[in-house]
Image (cartoon, rainbow, N blue to C red; front, side, top):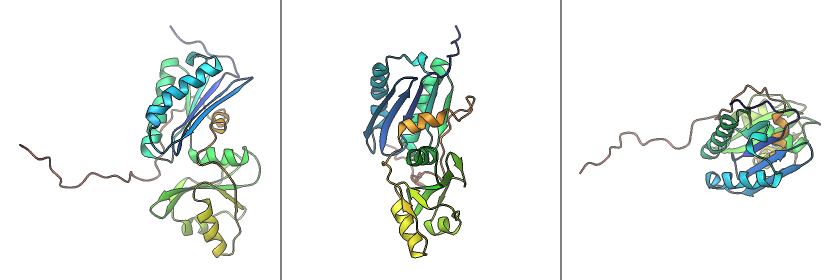
Length: 230
């Protein structure tokens, strides 16, 4: 039996496990339900109980959700995959669409609410690099990339005067050394799940969440290592 198409605006369920929190938001016509816990690991164990608690609070079943959304990275490899797999599974089970929102755009939305002046999002990517992208409202001004801060500043749009994210202070300091002033916007360590749910409305319903990896994984197999035999 096919699932009926829900009337709009239908509830949106958003999940973020890409960085240092496990977060859920449900947006309905009349209520906003959120759950969030800071964590560096353990997202896989925390997500489903958190989802269930949020759904019970909203008084909804998964078939009542009109659209699912999830952060697709950049972020931790395991965290991104946990969220994407969960949302894909829920979308398949219910026949509802699922969309992916980048963590960079989610932070821009968290900082600016989708409007206002241009903002640069810069997240610590380690290896002396940042994950970075600049936005004007919800429109990207640049490509998402993993890049060293000096190279980022070399090509940073002149109209960008604000930066947010875990690498914002480092970017601000290096910009100041060049005589360029950037204001650091105060945002939480992980994006607001409500912002993710709101962004989901802008994405085509026929898209499928795919992890966004801006560079290969840090962990690599050890070359030439053999399994000992007995």
